[in-house]
Length: 416
Image 1: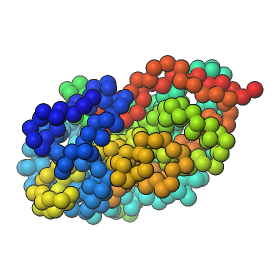
Image 2: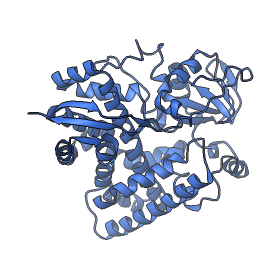
Image 3: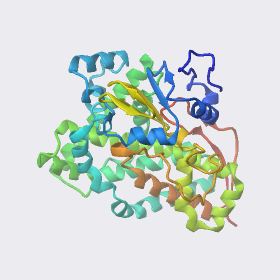
Image 4: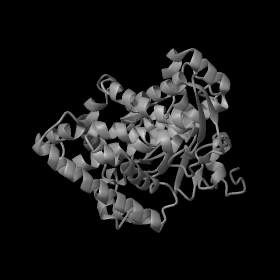
């Protein structure tokens, strides 16, 4: 799907909601990288940033913020909410639009410090046994069936189970929380319809009710889980009650969809590059590098925004306070100025410093957990199968907010 080169000078027009963009956005990203400057996209009301160097410059600059509240008076913030159709959503405005992801400065740093100890690589290694046990059971089922939808039957189930175990939610709620997360996250894309708005608000309400119940249970009977630890932080005055609910809700949202998407696109990359799959089978020690390459090759969160909180200079020109930038992380990860042969899938690629987890103060908190899930799942699939084959057409998500297959039919042959 080409960009409209007939658009007014300095602007671009394209439609990321089309199926062809969902399945193959790479030509659009290449066209954007080839254009000078940071072109204006009217549908976003901001400038698109597609090259690695420009994105890093913006993401690492603390004058670039996520929320207008960092530089606008309350009346202007309200006007921007209405313009973006993020108003008249009481639960969404209370718990989603005020989350750590959309908080800047000292408040963001304070909230991140409260949860960071639970997401260190050392701490998460303690969950490897739980992840391995779950994956082994799920792969047993897949091998017995022979043909599955990799997304519905494996990828969409694992992150919910793992993040729920970390937080302390009922395992029976995992599938429902995955669906709620999809409804909340999808509303951040450009096609914010009335139906999507209603689903996002209702999902937020249900999430809040579930977490309030869990909060009451853990306040009475603490366990070794994130909710209990956060209640301790709340009692110590490190964050408010609403901030606690919003932070855990955001962790649930972030821990579901993006991991599902990168598992799907990662398997799709292996299926499309049988030489790389064969090498990974023969050299399982390459799994951490292979997972790193899966994230680079098809970033599951391709798009994030920033605002200029003050007049500043970046990417070769001056910008006024309030300018909005769309950071195309997926495009940066295919930038030939940053990677040799960027469109080649190479499980042993080194160096491989990509932007799939973002950069700067808002870098993804759960990246170690996502890597753990993927390493365990792909190791089990390759170790216990004789062959993995695509068994039908792949259906892809559309939009800029997420990238990954909705459905990936898979034929799995057990080892003799």
